[in-house]
Amino acid sequence: MIEISNLTKTLNKKNIISDFSFNARQQECLGLFGEGPDVKTMLLNLLSGSTQPTGGHIHIDGINAQTYPHKAKQVIGYQRFKDLSHPTMSVKAFLNYIAAIRGYHGAEKRARVEQAVTRLDLYPALNAPLDALCACTKRRVSVAQAILHSPAVLLLDEPTAGLAADQALSLKAFIRSLVQEMTVIISSRNSEELAELCTRALLIADSRLVADTPLPDLQRSSRHFQAVTLSADTPLDLLALAVLPGVAGIEEHRHAPGTVTVLAMPGHAIYPHIHTLIANRRWKINTLNLEPGRVNDVVQQLSQERSH
Amino acid sequence: MKLLPVIFKRQLANYASSPATYLSIALFLALSTMAGLYLHRWVEQDSGDLLVFFQWHPWLYLLLIPALTIRLWSDEADPGFADLMSALPITAAERVIGKFIAAWVVAGTALILSFPLVVAANYLGSADNGLIASQFAASWLLAGSYLSVGCFVCTLARQRVVIFILTIGLLLAATALSSWVDALERQAPIWIIDSLSALNPQSRFSTIDHGKFTLHDSLYFVSMIVAFLTATIVTLNYKLR
Image 1 (cartoon, chains in turn purple, green):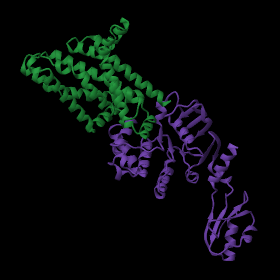
Image 2 (cartoon, one colour; image 1 turned 135 degrees about the vertical axis):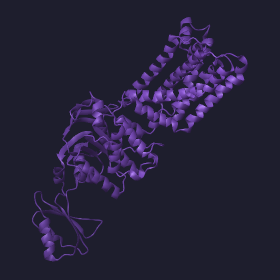
Image 3 (tube, chains in turn cyan, yellow; image 1 turned 90 degrees about the vertical axis):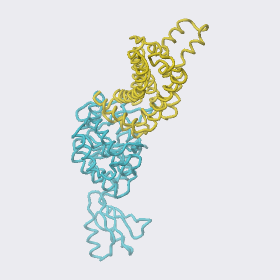
């Protein structure tokens, strides 16, 4: 679907992106992890064809994006981080305009716009000017114009940044449903959120591609993989927890007394043991969580290793 | 060039939705009619053409054209919107030419709206309609060449005030080129004066206005339009890098 080799971008004699190479298949969701939102935005800009690379090659859907930029742009949808605004255009006029530029007309154009409006639930805002919309609706319009033409590749730049929790949740559910249809590349500063959506992680640090791994591998390398967090009103018997088989250590939470995180040794599952211990001792537990691994920590650690 | 009609329609809708367009067209028509009727006493001259109205157009376009050009790229005044366009499968040429044609059509509409004068000329005496048609064509070509200058200025600046002032300045310099030539008459070599007066849109316009619709005068305006639009497209493409 996407093939990228030795992609380089230099701005003002400074390497923004140096020597990126990766591939993406259909129905894959790539997450761009790491510091530097401008680097990630630049990578998406290069992929979308709105900026030209200094060196390297981009093939999208078998099309060389440098030789046939027009053709490549037709199979890409791009939601930008920058908010849309226009003083007079309504949402409906805007989507119709984009659909017309995408080359649709007549009944097909109406059907395309209708479909996008339905999928993103934009009916209430249809006649409002773009400037009058709240950030959440603007983001939805932005996604709607990106999926209007059912692109093979969808680029999302910070799709959930600045949204309220419930809105972010519904947008995430929608993005997950899109992965069935197209290749999705998401950039986000919120690593945990990104981890929920993606199947593969690209870690960028210091303008380089540091790691390209399936997401489970990234989670597995976290210190907190298979860790169990439990909290109780009464102090817990930490010694009993520490001597359980496979326990690597215990972390007490400074800000929440009575809450501890039990770390597991690599390759061990400690959840059943802790569960039995609680049942035997009849502890009154408020919460008991198995952690999938803290991606944020891993990302930070890997980026720091790189810069040293 | 498949998307030209899309951009054209959008730009026309943009003009139609703005009160400034109607206001500037109305002002242009009122001033041009008043100049002919009161300054030159057209009714008393019994001339049969509309020369007295049209000879003011180069100066009146200084008002109309900048007012039209500041709306040319106002769709993309917002950086978010402009970036969005750069990721869409549309070429700079389609955008520039589509917008230019829309503005040119609006300028043409302003000209056509002065049709009562043609009716009056035919009613009051024997009008030379061929001459009047050539005067209309000349004025429309002049408007096109001024608009193409404005189109180019729009790629250099984003703020409306800057676009307005730059366009007025450039057009003023071009329109007043004949006075420059007069001032240089004895100081500069003859070839400079010759080339300057050949570049002067006002002298080209007045020859057509007097009824000599020659190929090289109309080609002068067409080549000016093509040159400035090409410069606009090249600048836009360069900016995308």
